Image (cartoon, rainbow, N blue to C red; front, side, top):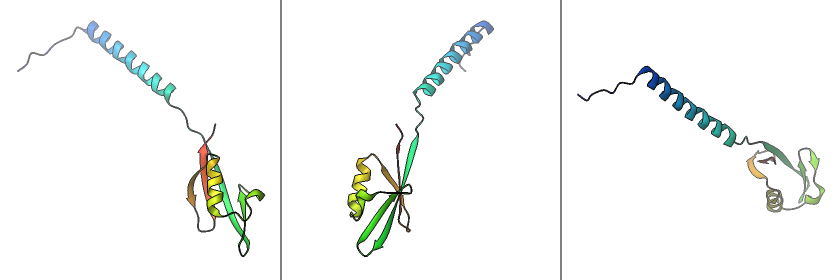
Length: 101
């Protein structure tokens, strides 16, 4: 059986205090280093007006520059602005998000 080391109460308290300071410093580093991510969201709705003619709406506002553009063009355009496609619904809603600056 190995000999068990014993610490005096004052040595034990000192060791605990040092370890507590290390843990507190580590926790503070983690909290300061952790960046809270804030997102903004965009909902794009595609509306068919007549055969071969489409309108696009972003968060309820019509985007006339994208009228009748093919969907791949619209997706590339929105993606070039930093938006990431998150979801598509059967009703024609496209959900995007990006980190807010």
